[in-house]
Image (cartoon, rainbow, N blue to C red; front, side, top):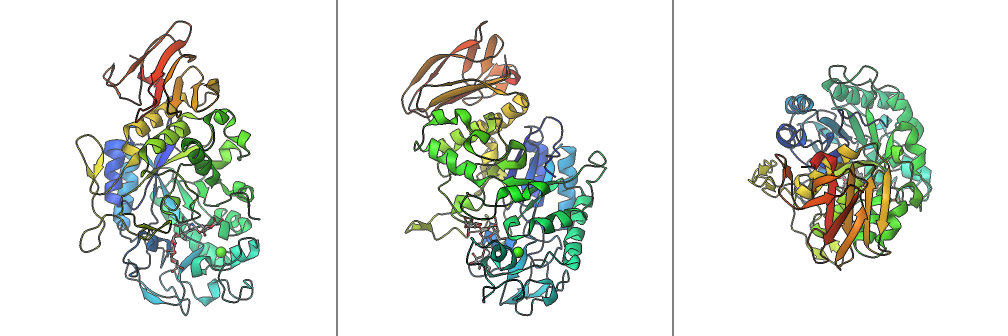
Length: 493
Ligand code: ARE
Ligand code: CA
């Protein structure tokens, strides 16, 4: 379950947070396919509670009502159309799966697909689940049935996360209903899953569940291909539940990664220490994890927060993302956000609930594309920033090569090669960099893919000349908005 399932030569996914299926289909065709992305993590497709206080927050999608594919992102037919069109563009769809719980308790209503639910009597007729399918006082011992103590693994798994009614995945019936949902998605053609709140489910239950899940659809994948599984387990080292408990059922989210890189690019920890980045920093094996600079939770102070970099600080954010995509460690995910008006009071954003750009009837707005390829209408589209998409291509080109020719100035200026295929120089120092460095690349002229593009055999930004000895001269001004140079053999003039 840890094989990425990407089409040949593609190695990075992007999370198109809250996008509509129809927009994702277009994005696969017009951008993600041509620019070398492997796939898209989509927001939960299952029918959710309509939350009205606050009004239609993004997080209502993490409160399922049924497994009917009907949300603000679209219906089942639109979902199917997206999967098919993305496949034609060689782009995979990875589904965010909310299976630990249903809605918040103590309320009732009608979901985005018109299905009734009752969180008092624990009745979810759209699946159907009844009170027999949830954890209760017999295995959760906190009194109010909510999780209070993350130092008690049993409580974390058997009690209610944020007071949402907690499914009992130990039950065969529950596993069967979830497996039916997953198999429905697999038969449509999805490539894998992000499992929300995996920490709150027993590893053994997840393995048993996966045992009932089909191999991927052979219209799109080689026969015998297992879905990719990304398990959301926030493990910063201080709790009894460890990432390693989940490696048997797929990859795990590496949350420490973005926090540590934020410290470096905020100049709280010297960049020279990145020489041993990866397993050398005590992080898990590269093949067991997924790495990212920020996610939809911690970019807005949810899910543990932790001072990560986001699109609100574009300069260090781009630098951290460039480093991530150039470095061999981990399987990479690029966040793609929408904007909202932050209202920070006492260190907390009072507006961190705000949903995606919407019309008056609360339907999600179309993504608009500007003439310079960036997005409009409130969509940030980090995945379309030149410095980011060109590094996605860099990663594809250098895939499989080791990190070589490490150089640093003893402080915040670093550089390294990927075999004889690519080279990156990062100046996080704030003062000028002016150095001759060994790139390991064949002689020739290369486009710097940070300051511009490789376009019809020409560089629209700076060019770098590599000599017969592999050396090149690099100059990066300390005050530059983009103090990075990256070159690779796919962008040689
Ligand atoms: C909302 C309201 C709650 C309300 C609930 C039910 O905010 O006040 O009780 O609804 O009515 C998202 C939002 C939540 C939201 C929820 C449902 O973030 O605010 O609740 O949707 O609408 C833990 C989990 C981790 C989880 C984070 C948020 O371990 O799995 O909390 N992250 C995922 C998603 C979220 C999503 C959910 C799970 C729920 O990515 O987007 O919630 O499906 C330490 C621990 C972590 C812990 C963290 C925060 O760091 O180590 O394990 O994360 O603290 O508590
Ligand atoms: Ca649970």
